[in-house]
Image (cartoon, rainbow, N blue to C red):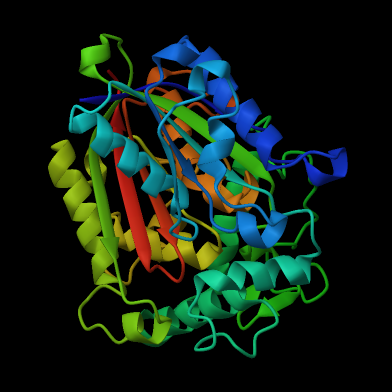
Length: 394
């Protein structure tokens, strides 16, 4: 079994460049913070994996594994590597570390995800992030590529099943409300005037298509890290009991052309893979979910694909209150990407860290009472790469 011995998340409200700091300092805080939380000495770490999307574009910096090897004298010859799969980069780093441990190559691994994004303006950041779509073939005329592509997903949901913005607005409201409890959330000190989540063009202006300001995640700086270990290391901790990883075609139009009851069959398959590997019947055996909500429609689509409702009926989980913090299956008690923040390369690692904290009962004001099993869903691109983990109390 692979166990999560401890982890760390930076404050997602910080603007690191404004403090004269960058990727190295972010990696250092998260990595050394995870070691301290796990009570693991640096010399016990045998391999490190880094998740990052666009260090070259935002900071002119690649080869981030070399930076990790510079963080502590004990790591001067540490084997490291960097992984990229758009917004699922952190989860790819986790999967690589798990494979190392399961193969018996190593007993202890550090996984750290990082993204510096607030050192440029919003328009430039949006264009940098557009590299995770198929450059030159989609979203070419959009001012903001990702809101435009996910607005297309919302249109497809509407065409197939109907889609009310009231349900998207409720998802935004829940996640921002959850973020107010989280001392590390980007939006923890924000205020929300009455009507701001609805179709008010002043309070909630359109960004692209049918997606409005509060339907969209924000540009975030941040890093997160976890220390993973095999049972050979002899330490207790939450267990990664199941996982799923599938990839669909790169172009959104090709994915949307795939037939079947589910909008993204490969996402549904990843969910089933995860449940099967973890020995879970489905969401009825899960106490909480940390899911990708780069946009409200992303979470909306995830709800039926994860099995909370039949295909096309995600609205039922929203209207019933199932996904609320005090609901029967809370979704994004951390605040999610919309409320907590979305430093792209760090998100998958942050989700795993939060899932482990929940099943340990150490999630503070975000704690779901009695949580023993948590699920994460991390998505890269226009639902191109999907990765999931089930985490259970050790």
